[in-house]
Length: 150
Image 1 (cartoon, one colour):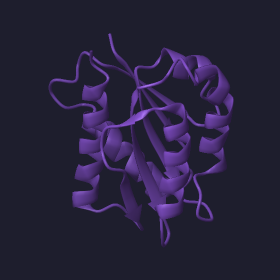
Image 2 (cartoon, rainbow, N blue to C red):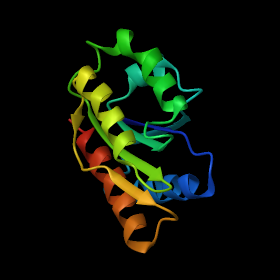
Image 3 (tube, one colour):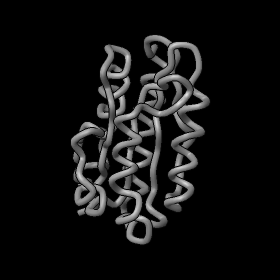
């Protein structure tokens, strides 16, 4: 069974709302055959990442960068996962108070170095997610999940 690993840092109400909207997208019909593992970035182990077939990443934009928690996840995974996770699909959501481009760029640099395959455009939300943004988050999650299937 394909496994999607959702790695997130969701400390605020807005980031938690984004996470919930993304996870709701994984409850859609046709995705029953995908195992979903949800882990906070600070506690996600490299073994869990190596066992996954794809990744859905969520982070706030902190001072123009991904959260330190998501960076910690990447730091633990990088050398052990460099060859093993090559080509795996991923998607990203980012919450910002006024801008998210630096956080997107920082995740993109690491994912490119790992040679992961971005399967959907990142979903960036400034402020609280509204209805269309929640739908975009659900679509992002479903797209990544489908991409995990052989």
